[in-house]
Amino acid sequence: MSDPSAIVRNTSEERAFAIKDILAPLLAVIIGTFMVLLDSTVVNVAVPTLVQYFDSSLHTIQWSIAAYTLALSAVIPLAGWLSDKFQPKRVFLISIGLFTIGSVLCAFAQTAEQLIAFRVIQGMGGGMVSPIGMAMVYRLAPPDKRGSIIGMFGIPLLLAPALGPVLSGWLIEFVSWQWIFLINLPIGMIGLFVGIKHLPSFSEKEAPSLDIVGMLLGPVAFAMITYGVSEGGVSWTSAKTLSGLIIGVLALVLFIWSCLRQEQPLLELRAFRSTDFTRGIIISWIMQAAMFGSVLLFPLLLQQIRGFTPLTTGLILLPQAVGSMIFMPMAGRLFDKVGARPPLVAGMTLMTAALFTMSFVRTDTPLLLIMIVLFFMGSGMGLSMMSLNTHVLNAIPKSLVSRVTPLTSASQQVIASFAVAGFTGYLSSRMTSSLPNNPVGTNPMDSHAASFADTFFLAACIACAGLVLSLFLRKPKQITDVFFVPLNSRHNKPQ
Image (cartoon, rainbow, N blue to C red; front, side, top):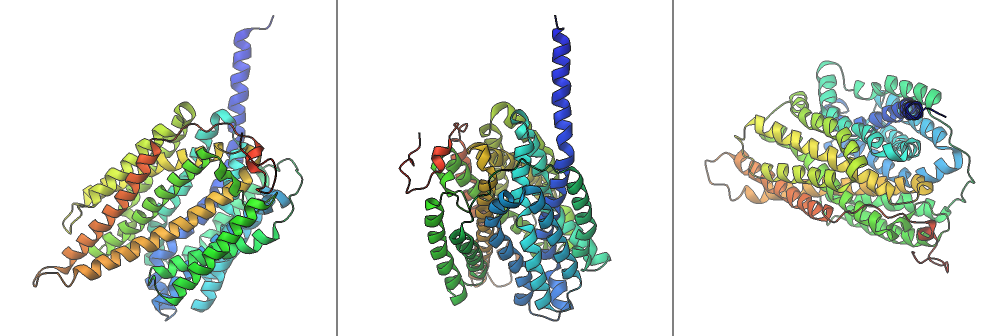
């Protein structure tokens, strides 16, 4: 007879070997994702330097950020089809290569117009890295370890944007602005090397037919909505804003109609037929709005009200990254044991409490208190984001993960753009309205600080709405592909 203890030991060794075997491909995905997300914040700190270097206007240089976002939004819907058609590994590596090439070109830009064009190349590569990377991680992870592994993958999702201002401030102050782009060259080369060597080639499956209508309408919809929201930060009634939003919404309506009728759509919008998926993605949008809006507010507060340099501001923001780094892996382990709701409720509670605390900010608010609030914000983000991402992916069939991750990434990109523009517009309007009522002889910075407090209160209310909804989250029910048949099919009713 076999020794039962030996069987247990062998099973444990096999499980340990399987987890260990995943670390190398996971590292390749993390490197690529970290590089792309790092670039999403490093340029923000460099805007004044770029205005001076290119002798250009602020509005023109801001398009180097908007163009990158637009390119990201435009290509995300194509990620699912391309990964199914040409293998996820191949598309992932090509995307990293394109992003790296775009980064080098940005460093050698001679005019503002060249910089904007090269940022588009960056965005075209970077837009597909995150959704394809998430889909590969999900397919690599054993079901019983999925939460922990996606938690490890989620670290760069929050760590990179937090470290971006620190790195950018240091490079601009002590080296040159070109290196905020050139630093991607060695990172990209390492990512390509590790990916070529360790990323697996997933089993072949029948290539889906190309959704031509969706391929045309999807990028137009996401790009134009993002453009309209970006211009809305300046004026919500301008011709550019209204044109972008009207064209984008019309294209989006047609895109949704097309996807629901296609047998193999560009994006699996039929995932919304799952109430668990819908509930999770709505909470995710609310969390993204509160998170990205507040992440924008903290650097502005520290530089405009407190007068800190970009490098010092980046260092002050580090507790947020530390909180995310500590609690995101912890959320993964909690998810595997108790599901999404407990860590999500805890995370949303921390975020809500932190934002409500900042609604009392004044010019003399202790810096230590702000750093403690930042730590709680980061901790809440780590607990919430990991839990929601895994919950949403568990709510749909595993075979369709590669189609749903572009949907979640694209929608979150639009929500993030809307949050940044919306909070910026609200902050500006509060500042404008408060100045005429400012008593003579008082410090204008006091009224500006009060405007920040009002904006933090708005972010706290949004986070509170997400907290309430998270109380109703449940473990996803197992669903079948009957949820994903076209609307014009006779077999389109959920079971």
